[in-house]
Image (cartoon, rainbow, N blue to C red; front, top):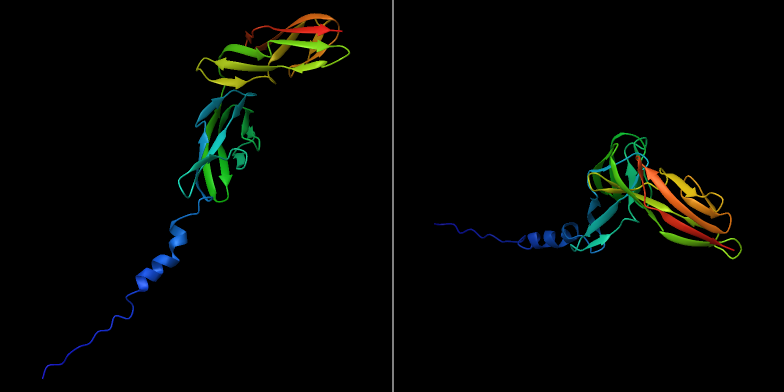
Amino acid sequence: MQRTRTITLIASTLPVLLIVTGCGQFFPSSNTITSLAILPTNATVAPGVSQQYTATATYGNNTTGDVTSSVTWSTNQTSIATITSGGLLTGVALGNTTVRAQSGSVIANTGVTVATKQVSSVTIAPLTQTLSLTLGPTTVQFTATATYKDGTTGDVTSTSTWNALPTSVATISSTGLATAVAVGTSTVTATAGGVTSNSATITVAQ
């Protein structure tokens, strides 16, 4: 006599239950950062020169957004380069270090080299400024930007040598802050890397 076998499939829905309970792990929410990208990558800056970095996030729904001001910025060796909470890096001493942007557990890194770079030109701004001895403003902040032989640029405001002539009309600090002294006209220049900038004009009125 031949026996018959009966098989009951009581666990047939188990795979479906596993997929449902694991769904949140495989599909991050639209506001969850899944990756970060830093620009510029592998940059070279000169000592005392600043370079602005940006961070772009990719979210769970594949959209992207600028998160430069919300990530945590750092460098591996602050003796070579420092970076602010807004992503502004400044070269300190010759060498190589790593720039890091972090949001939660998501991290992006890129290298940075601090090296001497040959300046090809220096540009200062503003080109013209009127100051007043009585009605104000009595001061103006100048900025200096260097263009290097490799085509890159850098802020050299704090490392340039500033001049305002004649000083009897206006004086200028080592960081580019000019102050009115007497009625007249003064010419401002900045020198960085042995290269002198274009001229700017300060007119001082009563």
